Length: 267
Image (cartoon, rainbow, N blue to C red; front, side, top):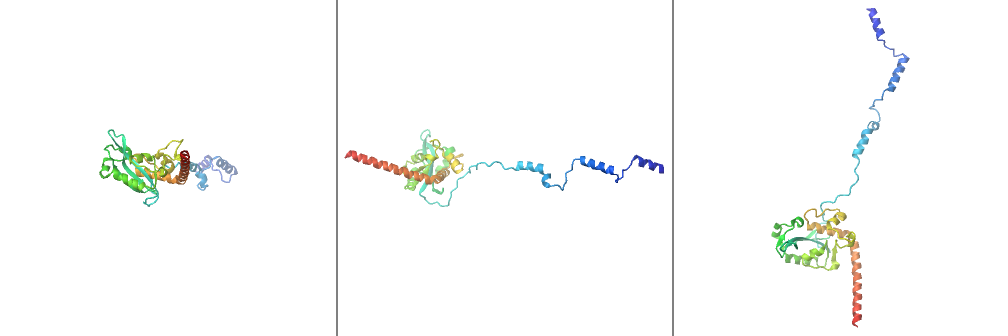
């Protein structure tokens, strides 16, 4: 029994922990192994790779231009008749082929964008084309529509002595068979600073650029269109009114000179 024990010890020798050579070998082996991640290490070091990736994912996209809002809202609850009113009309087609325009709806808003007048109109001639895709007017709207002459009279009374704002107002005034003093008209299609290369621009594009608002996406809304024209006018009001006064004085001066020349010729 004693001899077997001796041979086992010889086959499996156990180095003494006190042996300096063995301790030195262990130290070398440890130095060659890749270091294991330590849970006590700096959290920033442990999460370096994920945090960089996370920052790329979470990085804010470049700021885009504010997309136009869908609606234009009044800037006050005041629904009174102001010194300036904006008007817009929606047209329907009359005559044999429906190619002639007639007023089917007329809207007026005040300086705050609140509606002060909005009526469907029964034209003098029979409607052939409601032009619904643009006008938004349908046959059922004519059930409560007012007669043309009644609407014309009411609109004339409302705009009398007031600044009339709108876009391509000559079209609206034409279908209403009305006129308005040129000095009291503020047309966003005619005002020079609103043109591009001397060309008139659509109200839709002006509203998007100046007001950041989307209008006329599908059927036109005269309330929205009148409101857009008024808000554009309000933004340019100071400079616009100044230029109007300057032009009026210049024309007045020219008229006086012409009168003097006429009187001089007669004498």
